[in-house]
Length: 162
Image (cartoon, rainbow, N blue to C red; front, side, top):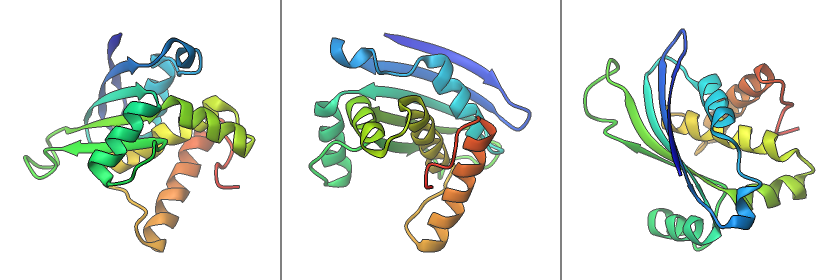
């Protein structure tokens, strides 16, 4: 199932397509498109974005992580950016965000977090990656975590790093 949405922000425009590639048992835990859109909009900076958000199970999450990162396990979120070098700041950013539903649900339980709050955090995290933020160095991680915490607070969600 796929839904396309167009949302406006004072800073930028978000165009989002949500794809679900889930087993029946995984569907009940998957966030709704309206929530994904709200979390993504909160993370928009100053660039228009066209993004596909794919909700997957562990098999697909593991295969993607292995193929693109060389890591043989399913991870919670993957972000893919396309055409970053083409155009300029006046051109939209294009990308995919993959959320592995069973991993997110398991992590939320292990960390004592609400599932929706953990999905919101990872959606914000993926959107920031799409916009060029990273956490490879300690300084980058501090910047990205502070921004995530601020965005989530605006959504009424507590500090995910506390």
